[in-house]
Length: 389
Image (cartoon, rainbow, N blue to C red):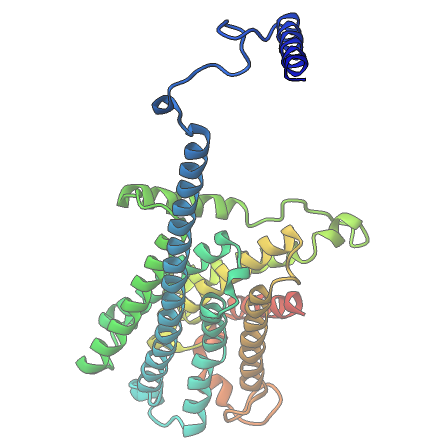
């Protein structure tokens, strides 16, 4: 029994050995299934590399998240600061306007009534405040991320230029008001400081919106010059059309009209600065005291109109909430400005074209001395109202 069992096991072992030799799996040869490798040579390089790659990606993601968080906080802080400075700038302009227009320093107009002074001060608020509010609101509201970076940078530069102009016209009042210097040094320090701070803040916001830390003063100046020249050449519509029923004009929306508004407002920005009295009082009709300082708001409105023109050409004019704010600000400001002009022409200030009296000719001689410029300014503001509808 034991001998037979031993013989069976021996035959089975020989058979298995023969089968391994036929298949090629012979021990102690090179073509073995698993080579003999010392344990200290065994590594897990693919797993380690995968873990290192995942760890690096996680660290990069954390860095980007932290940077976005810092940028978000910085953007929110900047928007809040612009909102506060916008309110302070409006308050400074109101103080300056009330101080300069509450009485007339010229003895010829010493008998002007309170009604005349109120109408004149209202003229300093009617167009300027809505345009300023619309611009600051578009830049500082929580949903202002809808504005494209180009429009944001353009508006910030416009606010910077307008604020610096207002600061200069307050600090050196006699140079901007035909010799009149009606402000105390405290009012000058307050108003010019507020406007200058607002301008510097707008410059910082423009610089931050570029997204690079390697720009020098020279490169920034070059960028502004190239952008200004390009914008001047782009005032006209990119696809002009004379057929009002053409699909091309319909798809272009109000780009042609906004371009014409931009040109008109830009012209009336420059006109008071380079022209003598009485032409310098158009279009704001604020006399010698505030016509030139108020050019800052006319310039701001010209930039807003150009932004609306660019938005109309891109087809996104009705989709952007902030663009809508700019349009409404221009429409409200131009409407109020025209309403006050019509009241003066009708004769609510002591007589005019419809009401009896000589008030129009006695207290508004500068406006009537340049009828062509006055009529042109009325047309431009009416065109703004039409385009904003």
